Length: 135
Ligand code: C2G
Image (cartoon, rainbow, N blue to C red; front, side, top):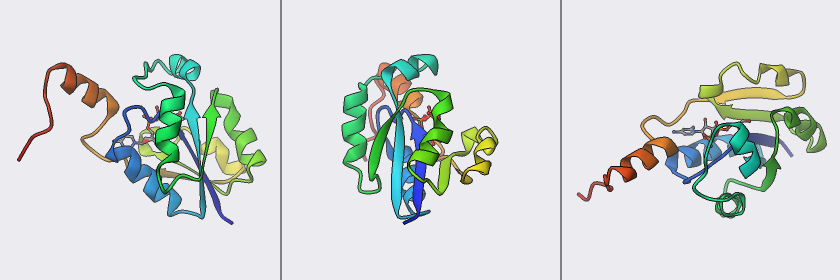
């Protein structure tokens, strides 16, 4: 069984996240998501709208996701790859090159980000009262 892992905050889940998870799952048979805890998000300088438990339950409802584990630090990836016998590490190409050190432990793949959508954009536009365009 080919196991894939990815990591992220996945706040205000949107189609860019789903596109990433769909393509990540297509790289193997089993997809693990390391979900940033609220505490780790503070280290990442991210303030989340949804709590860890809420973000976890959203991710677990996605057909592409097989297991959600907590991401508590930058350093846990190698241990996770060993512990879960991961074959492929995948993440969006906004991280291109940043995780090449994992190549000693598994395949490393950077996937193109979905343009135009981000949690930050959603927050900003909602705060200006911009709602979805009703055609
Ligand atoms: N993503 C994407 N397209 C978007 C937005 C996000 O493909 N429009 C991808 C990101 O590249 C990432 C994943 O969705 O692979 C989750 O995005 P974030 O929650 O923003 O994750 P990030 O804060 O980058 O956390 O240790 C790694 C970090 O935890 C990554």
